[in-house]
Length: 431
Image (cartoon, rainbow, N blue to C red; front, side, top):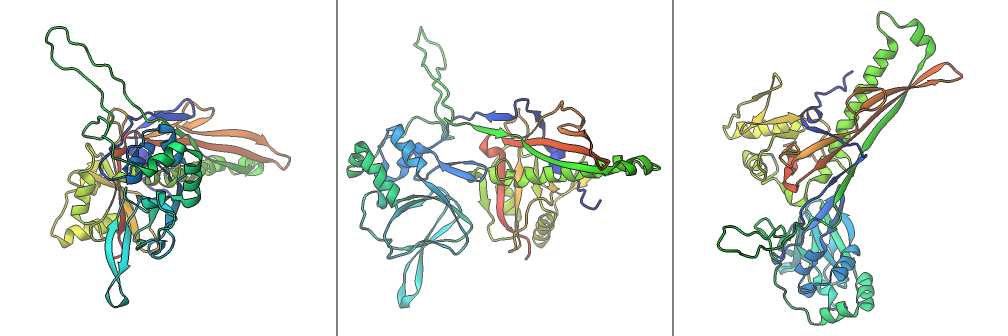
């Protein structure tokens, strides 16, 4: 079977038994007011804005009513734009507030001789059109266009009018907004845990609590299943020197395992490519994967256990290193020599997609529950289990003499802390 691959991701992920069918990840609430950027949370491919972060918009600064912020955040709609697609056009009515969740947006204004001039490039966390909260007659002064694949959260004029008409407090605040002091926070942007250190007399100890995300992520188990049908005549007569049923089950199990790894990478709910935190997705400096890009990806987390890349991407890394006269030493993992960067192995995974334009991604993972990294989830102890989390059950014989076997695999993956997983995106491998 040519489709069998080393499946390094499944081999290197530490697997955790999930008895309840779901796995909850409680994280400390993290946001940083006053930095001028809006923070987002993503559950797979679905992105939502952190409600308190809306106070970064100048018209909403000082708005401290959680119910109002939650109501505003819930009305933002997620939109996807391809490179070159226009988000807002100059001269059109300014009819929406746009938050850039991920990607790059170029702002273009009028230039000399009827040519457009590039005013600036906005990236993750930036926003534009916030004056739509205040002025219903304004027009877009410039054109905003996606430069890379871009995810934007938009609040339209109809939603703004509905919210202001329903809330006197919001309408009054928008008429006279003011700056608000930032809440106590750590240098990582997390809510502060008040502590006392040292001892002199009988001091009053500070009271505190750990502020968690209000809606923690729950990872549900994914499933890959198929029904293998073998005629009883084949099972009876063609069982030597090779057992046909056993061989067909073996190949079916291999295909299920291949699909399992594909889902761990690409599934929109729990796949690694879609569950990487938006702040942990970086772009290459010039297109091809240079040593500088690999260093940037490596430096964003502690204890990076391994990189994951398509074999063609690994070849592109090698070309760039050779061009610069750099020859990274390979490392040995489980008795096999693999490519490495600064001693961190780079495992091949052909499940990482390559776009029609010839670009791909490189993943960097810290793994394990103890290190608050990436873990695999599976349900073990199943009836008919032949591998951990994978079972084969005989379901009977039908009227045509067909034997039927149900092959099932239950699995998922969880990112315990945002910086446990990083992605180098839009890596050019065709050059």
